[in-house]
Image 1: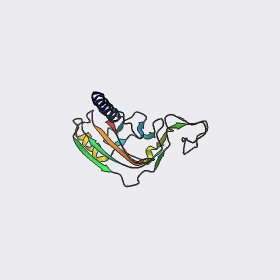
Image 2: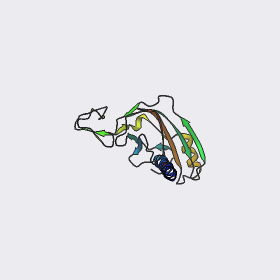
Image 3: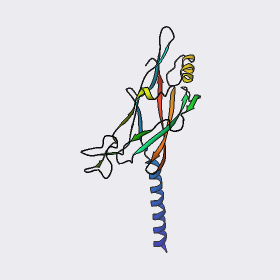
Image 4: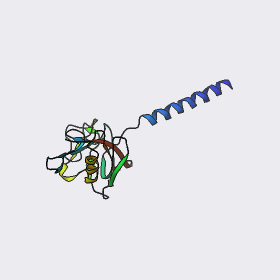
Amino acid sequence: MKRLLTRLVAAALLVGLLAACSATTTQRSFLASLQANGSLGYEVSSSGDVTVTSRNLVFSTRAGSPAVTITDFDVAYFDDGGNFISGWVAASNALDVFVPAGFTCPEPDERMGCTTTSPGAVAAPGQATSVDAAELQLLNADAIAAHISAGGPAGWFAEVTFNGQGAYGPVREMFSFFIVVPN
């Protein structure tokens, strides 16, 4: 009886440990960054004209991750205290960005990159996919007007949530980007 109880307690501890580990090791389906400096920004000329600084949005997958197609996104803007300022939701299928799987190989396909079945494929960060700044703008006029009227303080940020489809179903990842001026 004592041996059975010891095994049950050990099994329960092992299950609890595995559950705790899985909750803390969840990785993103894909990564997103803004090139060149990682933030959203704008500049105001001496005559009051506002120019939004262009940024390329770059997506990639982690080593060993499956490919993802990103279809749309939504943006929420917050002040330096975390208070919601404004937001917007892109139209369904506003994006059609294919992000290759997280593998590398000697001869990657120009668009598809490498997959687990590519000759010589090994897990590695996926081939980056860039969305040109001319195709996508993540900073809107409402957020800029609110930031200007507040005096352009540091600490304002945008939470951008990208939605798409991966090999295992729908994916949704949120990324935060600071709003800076002058940029």
